[in-house]
Image (tube, rainbow, N blue to C red; front, top):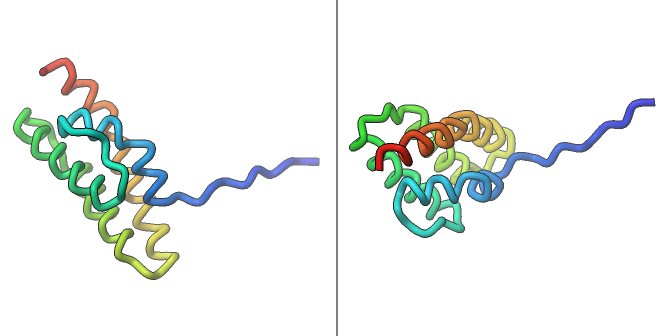
Length: 103
């Protein structure tokens, strides 16, 4: 008999909870607690990483997907956009680690 585990659906709030600390570090701000605040903070972090000559394409995509998901009223579309945002946000941990070494 196999046991299936239910996976939690991916939410914008879950992405904020997962990445707020690292994005806040790069943005040099207190961690955002709302999705719109996180998107703004992510854009600030992107600017800081750009100044340090990082390739921020993935993070720019993540901010766009997250904003679009936040505005979407279609559940299927929101799920797809959040997955894309999550895939692109995965790069921030490595970038922040390298950024820490530079500042």
